[in-house]
Length: 372
Length: 196
Image (cartoon, rainbow over all chains, first blue to last red; front, top):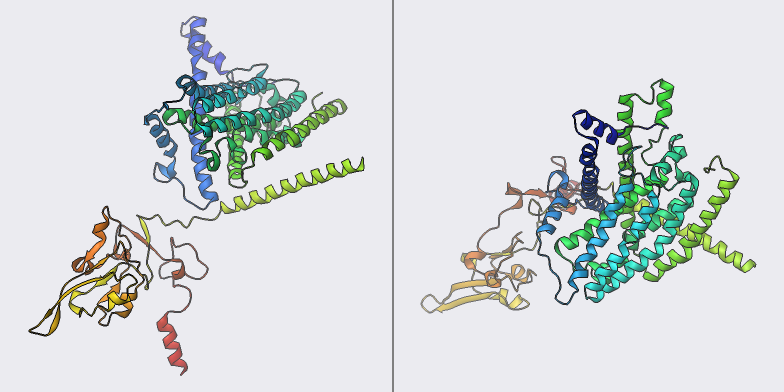
């Protein structure tokens, strides 16, 4: 298997050459990926907020943000700065500890999940062998924070919103996990790197989307529900619940919810790209093409090109999915709470179970195509 | 047994129909993305009011004969005509005239019935004030003429929908000299005279 670029190894090696001991070199390396992850996630949020506003405007024949920077690209920055400088209000009758803790519990797991998102063979913060399971586990922490902030606000709308968020997250977690399980079964690994590698080699034809036509739909629906995106945005349904669990929040605490929801959207899109759209793979099998031309896999310039193409492909795929989510937002009306739970428990759950069983059967019957 | 099969079949059919309709809806939303916005960005762009726009009323003090017809035809007797009878000249002498635009509904009856045409409609509509009493215009304020949108160098004037060429709904970036749809009144008059 092509090992690609090993940034960590070469960074530590170059520091060692400068005369630093190995442990110090490793300690210098350690905060860099974390910093990069936080910066990357935050910039991703800014881009998505801008995209959301511009695409929404285009879908409604409006202009959208225009004056803050060219084409209004600085609008999310301006919004964020405004939130930072706003007064932070804790309602008098609210439980101040839980009220403060709530947004943090919602945001931290989402950022943590970025640990397992690979942008290339070695361009991942940690290649855990339980990678995708970590994401599912972390995403089930968020409803606790939502319920906590909803309950601590001491407000009926916030409480209802929090309860709805918890109910929604719990019921859509199961089809989500089951559709991920089908993928995991095919790639014989929970590691995100292995899942992508299993799809590589045949370009676009090797991607899991062809082998899991039902699975990717279930995953996408469940992911939208997990992110509280529009057909499933009941927890913050503004017509009924003012803003759901965010009702009593202002300033940066509200900002945390806001950032958290968008980071979660980008994260879901990234995970979708990894699970079903071949992660960092180019639609054409690049290493085979290089082999046909007669360029070795280990040529430095080829490695740089494939690595940067990989990052671009991952981001492009993720933003394409974000675009679909925004388009869906302006197409579909919000479902009722009973319809939401009906869809989750009576439709997605049995279909995803059937999908899992069919995948298992196909894996036994055709081990070549379904990862025996 | 067959009943259950039928139910499953119906449910599956329903699901596929729903998916189909979602796809159709998405295509509609997607199609809207290629239509350009017709937004008039207000303080920088303004629509040109039509010739018969009923804006703030203009009043010429010197033409007024204090007949009070405007007061009588007004739905709420709004114009205030302050005159005294001069016994020497045996004529009404007009002191003040005012209309409160905070109350006026711009129906145009006073303009319609004024025997000396001293009242007329302007195209001014930006009447916002911080105090509603500032909307009570006296004869001096009523005699001012509004600034034309087309002459304001800070503003891009845009034509209203009825004044655009045939088939065009976008007022931005019109070619120079693009005529509006239909005929102008003078053209119609010329044609009717030619046919006689």
